Length: 184
Image (cartoon, rainbow, N blue to C red; front, side, top):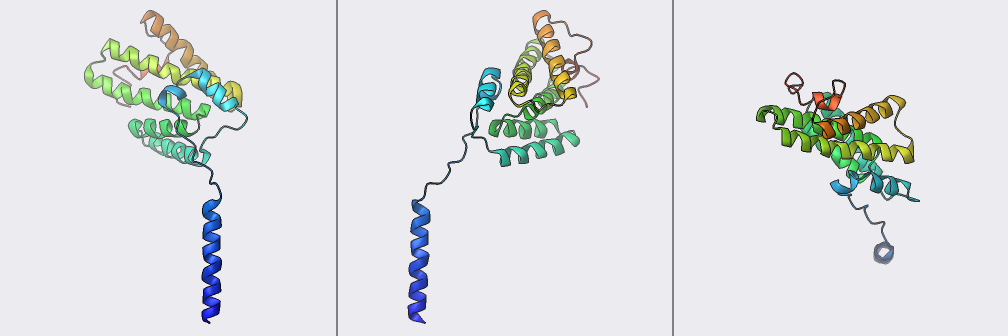
């Protein structure tokens, strides 16, 4: 019995040493917010031969974002979609992050009286995510026709808003910053 136990311990030790000496796949590094807001970076990253994203975690954070969105918890949804995009900047995660972020910021700005400089900064910030979503779609072709149309409309109206400071009447992202929508 002692010989069998010794042989077992020797085999277990050998397996442990062999396992420790084999290289492990390093965890994919998180992208920065600046990287996921950069359309050129997102297109290049998604277009690389094999993006090193953490798909499993990205999907988990995305599903968490959808739950928070359903509960109208815009802060939680924004954070979850943002974490998903940092792990794998899918066009959907970038789109959902921009929408949730603007809705959250609309609520914050309503409490502050909608300071114009902060609202413009919020819109410019979101524009980067929407443009990155479009750039990502150019590579992955994963947005539905409705999502693609929505992102294109948001990019167009936000650019118009930022150039003229006049809120276009058909600009959903800007409506998140109106008194009637801020509570939603």
